[in-house]
Image (cartoon, rainbow, N blue to C red; front, side, top):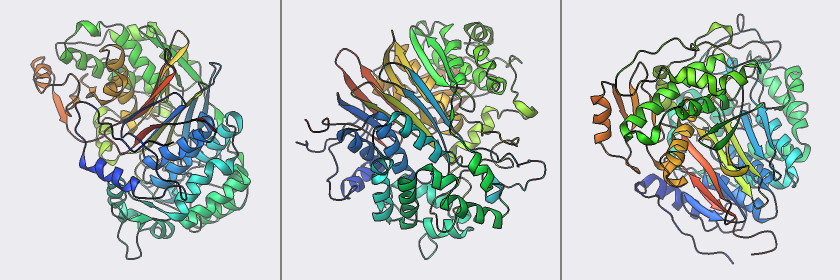
Length: 575
């Protein structure tokens, strides 16, 4: 027996009109062929039967339906990931990349790296360049990653978990306000490519508006082929041949051989700890080591003994130090150094709370090949463009999945092959990423993270937002652990970034423990402040907390986005 829809509003943050419209649009459609939308709460929900938190309500709903039908967290994650590739196409696609962290029911941890890759025949020195378009396309990884997750850890067939995505593509969905705005911002570039223009612009060339029905029957057909034949058809079959024919005609680097050679690989799992909590993430090309390093640096400081302003400065500086060390990551043997407590103590010596400082050389902002890692200012300039989506799932047996999926910049390369219906990620050098070596996978700030206590799961989370992904996660964990905020409020509380040899960027949304006077306190320390009141500018978290005493899951969707958290209301065949 289903309850009536309810709405939960986080304390300290008013319900924004854009979210109200998102809910209205969600409740007004038939997402899965005759089934009424479920009761759900905008940002927080609780259930002992499993949980999904995702950046779009229909993706959340797709995952929960799988849980209620008897699927596990891996099944639900794959269903939600394929669905969100349909309903949030500005942020992710089956032509993009995926990073996955899995906590198994028995406590083991696995990672899957399905990042886009430069073909082995690719040479940046002679390849065409550009900020978008065919030269930016690398070998897609998402389909390989999602199908591997299902094959190794799921229980349902690929056809079953892809059914919601196929339905949404075939029948259409109402475009949410922020998605409409993102698509509109890229309309001029999208219009340059035949397939993209057909799929993401109206016949008159205008972008879809909030509330418009966006149906994608061509994409539905592609998804049906994948559901029937698996990753084989995408990397070696009919879809692969269609992709390469289009690529070759427009000078792209992807070949049939490079598609055939692609594999979703084991991700190197990295570990750390923070004030008694165990931290588990994934290493290069993901940024788990960077996230863990920032927390290790902060662990050397007495954050609880600081004022709110002092703590904000410390967090921003620790994040800057960890971002500088991004360039040290690469060879697997470096993982132990970056995540060591000794290295964190050395880096923490550069933090200065209470007076302005000039950043030292430390690990240095270096990356393989000698290209500099972007500093905070260049990262900040990318923020209005936004990118990436994240979802988290959990089931009643204790499996948890954190899955981050992206195209890179908004709508990725802006290219979609006619007859296939999906966009390709921006990957190869000359655009927003540095030049890549043959066979290299795109470096990323993606950072799915598992937090445990005495071996028991506490949190699984991740974020979207490019360079602000580690920023969002570290801020939330400090709010949760050091400030003792409940998980929903820890996600809601304002975030900071930078402040070491440059301005401290401070989110000025109202939230738990926030006051405008905090900005003035930071300025009184002699530190320049960049006040930011832009929604979603500091990353968007979608995560799940587990209460071991009650067996309840608590799902949290970032209030700066249009996503939802929804728990399964029953097990398969029960209530």
